Image (cartoon, rainbow, N blue to C red; front, side):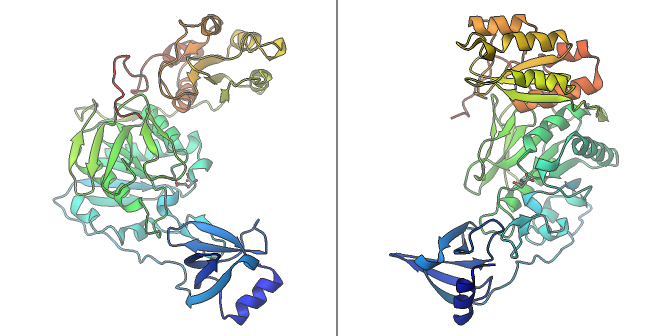
Length: 441
Ligand code: GLU
């Protein structure tokens, strides 16, 4: 609730929550919807949702507030069933939650996973001209709440749908941890012989600037038309609304918290570019659809950890994880794959702690927090020393892909094999040294 004074003033002006209002202060004038006080916000700060979809908070005593129009209430999308044209390829949309299936809750001003998947179709009738889309909704959660259990469940569902005749599968999910899920599915779906296209949205579908619809259309285009037999992420290629990239599942990462083109290829180039009207340009190399039947390999040992080495960092972190039963640790090192080993405070040296972990049988991998580029144990004495302790240098894998890979390896192989395979390419996670990165900025 806003303060008594604000509540009284709003009442006098006939303004209710959700109404379209004009706010003026100094020389600035803006329009937006009056939102309720946020749970943690000050009762003296009014919250306005601007047309861009962003909320701003302004001290009530600093602004003049006038009503423009009554509230239109929460945006409602009628559900729509897609027409099923028998001539078109059959694809499955596995809807698992996230912003792509969310809308603003006008009671709290927050974004909640409220809509049913069918409600998305109302605004994308184009889908019925691209494919026969069958929607399945195994669960609806935000991606930060996902773990290897949900990734395995998705892998099972994908395999089932492909076995039942789907030409491709689109997985709609939250974007925050999409790159972890994409890496996990890339490892879990062995002998994949169809496109598995992961998509989502940075902005919910009731916002004018939503990217949900184009991402969904482009993802369905890839699943229905491409000859790519890989797991990948299909999201906006730029901040404008004209095309999406299909990025290899093990080589992509969310690189911005809000931009529509947040997903970037790391140490790789996109596999393809796709427009919503179906113009498909292949850019990078990829595995083509051929023969074979997908098989799931879903084992996962979640006793793995990702830890960051930084100046002055406490190597006791390693001991903590080892004593908590961790069987694998990925270090996000600095530069070419370094951690402090000769700091002035010798208690802060990581060397002895790494050595102890390796001796205890923990698989330790090294990646770089630079993300772009490759770790290399042969340049500086620091990395030479760390590698000599038995740490596997993970080439140009992202730290997140290395973490997921290690969990997957330890869940499916014995420790020795897992250690051997960590530094070897399995699902496109390690690229050739001579691959160009002209897409990177
Ligand atoms: N944090 C939520 C998630 O990852 C919503 C963000 C999004 O979907 O982009 O599921």
